[in-house]
Image 1 (cartoon, one colour):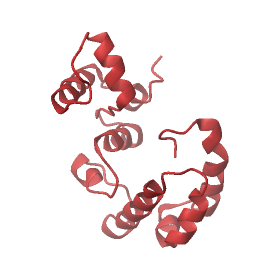
Image 2 (tube, rainbow, N blue to C red):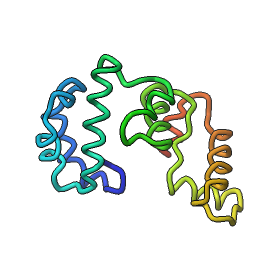
Image 3 (cartoon, rainbow, N blue to C red):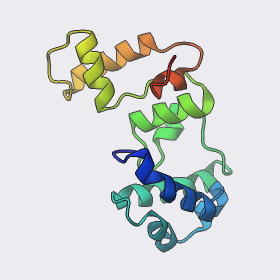
Length: 148
């Protein structure tokens, strides 16, 4: 919900969502219409559909427990490198980078990278730099940019 949306905008949607779908089994059992109705107003409806499909897979294939390895997390519908890194570092404390556009821009400035940050080689280069900087303890805190 927070991708490209402000926290204050999301908060009432999130609260309502959690009231309706407090657990993975509850969300997995919901109809797509219910899921989309709860998502209504946030836009990016493919994210809601992907989330619903991914949660159904988590329920069936992983017994309702989000997998703890990158390969399995990335196999879930709608989960790419960034989301996998966020899940693994925040939920499981694993040393995985979560590199999005903001991180690409910041690291390009920090390391004086002038090439196109959207090109695959530069993304790989910056991801490697982020991985070097990730602390062993609390990598999720680093990824969420709340390191103190």
